[in-house]
Length: 239
Length: 325
Image (cartoon, rainbow over all chains, first blue to last red; front, side, top):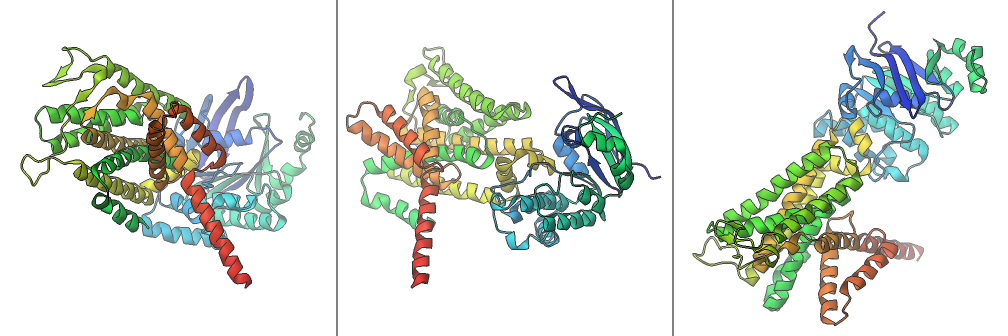
């Protein structure tokens, strides 16, 4: 098995006495498309924020391709190639769709190449007709796509997607699943999701979080039929 | 539109007397100060209440250097460089310290007030730099105007200062507009919109914030130099709370999310303040306060954005009427 692209060792984070992330050992193979699931408050978003320098861990380590990035700042992690779509769309509402993508692409590319990249990504996410519209005026689903497109325009090696299909229509969700599979051809992807059908359509392996710990890590069918997983989703305490 | 405005401004001295030119020059200088704040606040999202610190430093440094028999062009240059360096040092500690936005505003305000108090405490013979007495709260009178390079021993008179301040204001406005279209400028706008996203994309926001703060500091310092040239005087009021607060009013009235708005706001409020002063109202500050409240309530985005929205609404209405016929 190839060396993991991302690894956490005993990663921990406490908020006011609550262990949001409790000694998590997590490993991800290059090229994988993994889903993180678990009930609200399980620690999935906190985990993502610790991987991207938005929260500083209290203990443990984060390794990207073997390099320790535990104490790295958000911009340093961004430069190393981790891109994240946060749970609440984190976009530039006062700028146009094209300007949003340009800001992302310009970081790695000179002006002309960035313009080509923006056009290519706009086509991929089918946002070309909205290129000139202000992102703040778009529907929720479209804003999510803008954010995903920004992440892609930066050509990341690892993409973290926090609830990419939240608030989307059935058609939008299907399109998003397709988009994620496309992204996965070039980058390793981890997605936090609640929509089980969506998870089945994109992932082969699932990690289940519960109370800041990993409860189950299995292939998707096994994980979703696991009794403990059903118990935590129904609010029963897992054995 | 911009060309018309420029031509119009340049034609003013042909039609109006020195008193009018003198008043308008002051507006140009103060508008530069307003630009330095609105660039930071409206485009980068940093509210610096201490732009008067750079403004005052610019004025004082120019006065002291020019009065020590150095040629005025060099003095003006030093007058711009000093506040620029000062804002680099101050900005470094504030931005690398990652303090919150409110603390940034409070600390910058405190810095300008400290400088004001320090200057006020410099009365007496002990406080002399070269040949120049600082004179505490009485300020330094007799600050020379800029020398005209191509005419021996001649300095700019009121009309010359008018042309100079107008040209500088136009250049700085255009320069800042162009800056905002560069990659650097786009990241600055990104910072205003969403600082976290800028960081997640890989940009180190601290470098960009510091760059903007230093640029704004240079513009405020330049305004300070021109203020000293314009009034032939510098005093501790350059740094004071009154002025620091007034810039906020100019910018809010004009519209902080534009660069032209604050120029308009400065012109309007400064003219109104002067007019109220001559009308025997007595409580000019109170009247200004009422005006600010009114603006915040009625024109949330400021005068210029509201006017342009109104104009485009009228244009849309006219177009729909034409289409209906």
